[in-house]
Amino acid sequence: MKNQPYLLWSLVFLALCHCSPNPKSEETSEASKEKLLVALHKFNTAFQQGDTKTLDSMITDSYVHTNGTSQAIHKSNWLGYLEKRSKRMATGELEVLLYEMDDLGFVHYKDFAIVTGRVLVTNRISQDTIENQYRVTHLWVSENGNWKRAGFHDGKIK
Image (cartoon, rainbow, N blue to C red):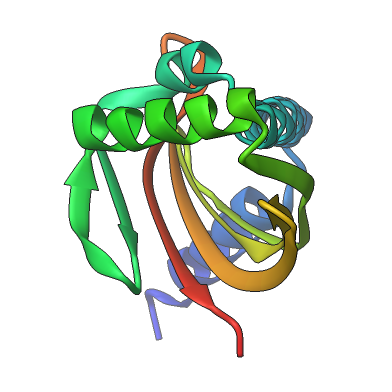
């Protein structure tokens, strides 16, 4: 039982380290989450409006996009899809009436975040109005202090 004082002091030290608030860390985390929310809103608005220039600036060079209807595509292919979509919007063939993300969840690491949610979409294609819902997972990384989307997956909700 000679080691008992050392054990007691070790436990006290560990408890103090674990329980002591670290305001700077919490503030940094909150500020980072707020910055991520702003980036997410900007990204979703750009997608709804077909703003490919903004979307291009907000994804990583090694971006990976997957969904339930095709194989994974990378940045250049996804931007190509967006250009075609944007042209359809410009001609009036496609109108995005609603693009809204809710039911948000966040797992935040230092320079990396996983964002989950549900996307509600209402499009008018020609004369048909189509409503869909998707469960989504975004992977975001912080590059030079700016959040960029590095990966995405969606699955259609029946």
